[in-house]
Length: 287
Figure 1 (cartoon, rainbow, N blue to C red):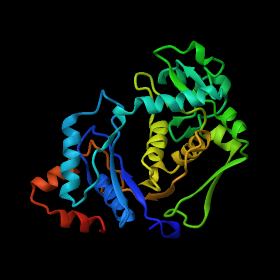
Figure 2: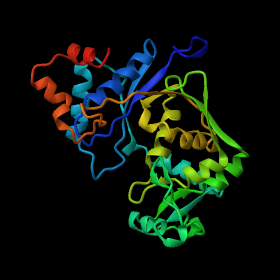
Figure 3: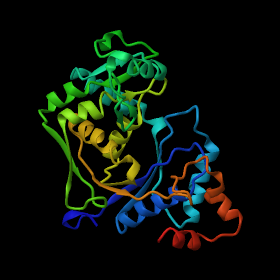
């Protein structure tokens, strides 16, 4: 239950690019547990239509119901919400905080490895921090093959922030995570708001979706903890309500490696096919 006796509203938001594994089960069960007796929602993150498959979406529903979970209908699908993301992009562009970027990953690697840089690339939540090659470009010059980036320094100046801060209810309860504006620019940088061919990105869509669904508690793995700095900034820029956060532990294999969808041997459907019960899976995960 949330602060002041208010009920939590949580969500589980998988991408239908493969079968759910034990890590997904832990994430979904955590979200449902922290919602009880509030509301647990399912959201389908299918903006990458080149990788998403309807059969995987169907399997997601089967696996979650097998685990004993239920959720309201209809389910939100990001592929149906492109106008909402475009509206958010237009608002940020109107503030003068975005620019088009034509750089490919190879271009970014080449720029960061140039001898004049003189230091190893800084790694942020999305990988190597973008060096700002296209920062001089105007939105009026944007083309269909461009990504759209946020000008981080200009965004923080617009907000008048010296630092970004948030609380996590699981990692360090009661203690705020703080990041100075200078460290945000240097260590996070000009993140992508809209990927070429998609019209949005994870960071933009998750912020818009959480607000539109009235999510009060975001539950997700600790691997996304550093992405929260980005989401706090976007919430402030778009004047959206800020949910609370709970970043939970990750499920790892016997070698300590985080599970991924390529680890098909740990797919829930295979456990089910081999005769395992949902109760056994829940118990193995600590529920």
